[in-house]
Length: 431
Ligand SMILES: [Zn+2]
Image (cartoon, rainbow, N blue to C red; front, side, top):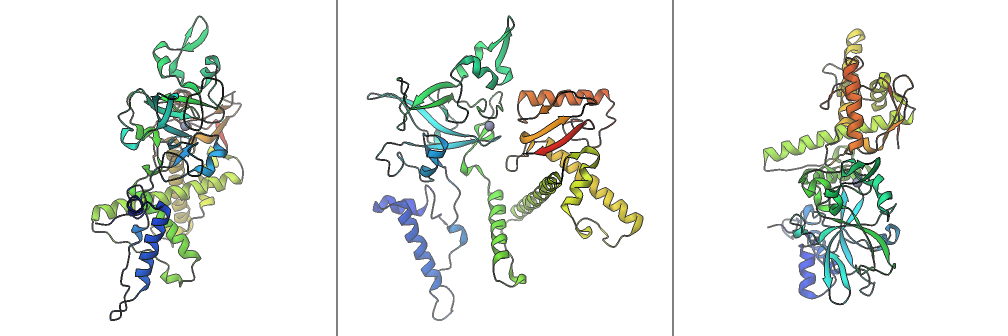
């Protein structure tokens, strides 16, 4: 049965446990041995004595670990090797697994709050197995910028709208939500909670993770953790294969091999797997090309709805043969073919921007600024997060206004309805 060299359960880790040597040295020794077996040729057949497979050197990403410190100081201790303390810190800096917001990428430490006789309360690293079956002591530590406000008043603006209620003209947190509020704590590198004002400011978010303290995206009900937070190992096999293949192709382009030899060959024993992977490749190439075209068109200046599809289509610079059934068409037929392709690109742009449900290629809607024209909208509207209540409300407003206008200006209808009734809106840029 094939076994990975690296990784928490890889051969290197097992050899390290048996010999007491450092895992990195064990991994290096195994890889050198495999390479030597590959170089030695059988005297009769002339073939390598041990032809290893590439995937033995590539294992699924595990978890990234970091100590409790400010982001710049954290960098030098980032590691993929799970251990209690960061190496070389004299057991001063405890390591914790990181998880990342699916919407904005903000990192959170996965922790468990425990009582210790010596130092009171301490945060220890949470293992992967307890991720889904969390107890009230389980949660996430947030050390970000700006830090979570000390004062409840200041925190109101960073809470999801659904958590607030108005009473006598002032806004406050709903009583039912108080237990879920992030708790402001101060911690040292060993994870101990300090009460004397020392240490580092952090916010403890009790599990279940209900909203992101950075981008404000919120979740209702029992949404699975995997939908909200990702670890390095969350990526699927199809994405990994796509990215590895792309890296191989990019490497081949720089090589001195003959152009006809620069190929990646893939073998599979399963027709469904081949079909799934082919679909993944196609989707990846299409979405990447589309977004690259949009970015290039934006670099040339602001885009307006009337010219958006044409400008992006031109920026993509597609050859007629790549989309036309008959690339030799001329005159009127050629114009009609180009128009159809352009409309299709227009539809694809709006669909990709509107439906932010992708796990592996999330769109950039969270960073898009829409500025209204003076004719219909008088205020600037900034969409910060596709999942927030504010954005949903904004979408609803646009949809309602579109309905009232009889959908006159809607060119592209998407699964979300006429939310892109953007005749009155001008795209100003993606930052
Ligand atoms: Zn976020």
